[in-house]
Image (tube, rainbow, N blue to C red; front, side, top):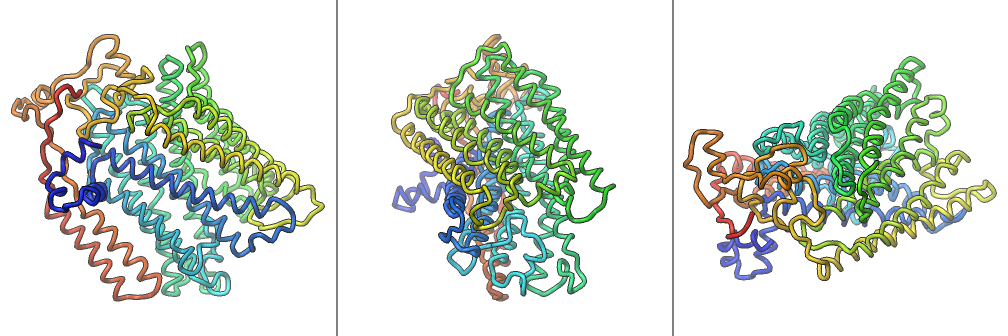
Length: 631
């Protein structure tokens, strides 16, 4: 962080207040590492908020006929819990690690479009603030994260402005996420270090690449859906209203064309994390690397061919249901390839059960359970029974919490030492793991049986005498234990920031390029452009050489031009334009919410002003001189 602050002496002197200058430097930063930290910090706050919403729901369901929370508030809680966890917590946490680590892993000094990267973050934060401001401004969204028509169309079905927060907030989100996907697609395809072909790229880079492709193709249908719904709600068109000639199933079709790839947007980065952690702590190369890459590509392809398995009960008929049942089962094959490859990587390895490795193994256990229940749900006649029951709640939490979240915990214990320069406490970490593991399974495994016993989801209470009380009590106790585990992780972060052992550049004897530079990395990442001479490039260099050549020599070798300035590295300048654009769009969204056309136009004009300044001002950048001894 000190290296980044040194880049801005002019701002510090003008502001006259070092604290304000430091805040402003974070608000205008375009450094991919700082933006990654902003993503991680913001997403963790939203994760705690979404967890609090879940905690309140479990308190309500702890015993029959409970009156702690009304059905109206419960509807808002389960909607905001789903929206927050999917759009504001798990996906941004993954994007945070992608932001920080991918340029380091491919040997780049930043992303392809640094200011676009900053804009993506601020649009994400604007989305989160707008959605959660609904709690203070009248009514939170209350129709589920899927927001089905006709409940979302207003009128007699759902009066109030809660759905408008959902519609306008997620439109802002869609723009930012789509821009981020394009940015990392270009970065990975065009900015890899010399010698790093795609088939030498780390698996986390591959999953980030495939995730970016999914984002680029999946988010436009969802954005179209939101625009049509905005027209229905604000201007009384009838796209989703049967009484005005529309079709309620149009929303479901467009939503799940986005929604199922979204599941893999959440889980593919987790696959990449596990593919980095397990080989490092098994002291083996990843088993079947090529088949893992191929399986990832197949999963992404099939992700767009299974959306209607969310709609088995709407009456499409046996032929359509059979086709989507087949594709839904087929996607289990490449996923199974990954599971067996991870197990084969561990087989015969010199395993070190660090906390990161424990979470990786825990991921395998919990994700397989979620996958098995997913195959059960892919059978249309069975799905008629499981659909809208707590069995489905158990399935999605085993996939996204036991899958994505366990992998993100593994990533934290693996990569936070690189970010902060200090190791997290392994003793606290193991307590953290076992509390999360036990609490998670106690909370969500009983929900399989609650669903089989007939408990519907989305209900705020249930009568006594149905055999549901003891399992609901156990589930609530599990949430208590899980909460303690998460809080212990936060304590570990704070404790280790002050008292953690210095990490050094490579505390794990790791395989990839991010571990070849100091912890935390300097703002320019690499003083020399890495030369990649094999898969697992750092292990290769530990065996045969240092694997780097001066940047000027690399420039000469590639372009025949030896005039690249020696000792100075060109870096992009900070910019306030992403804030200007985000502020304009946020003003327009709130104005549309309260039907103030004049201020909505003003907000759009402010956003356009930022875009035009962006287009015509350019970015002169600046040069930094690496400190002596930096790598």
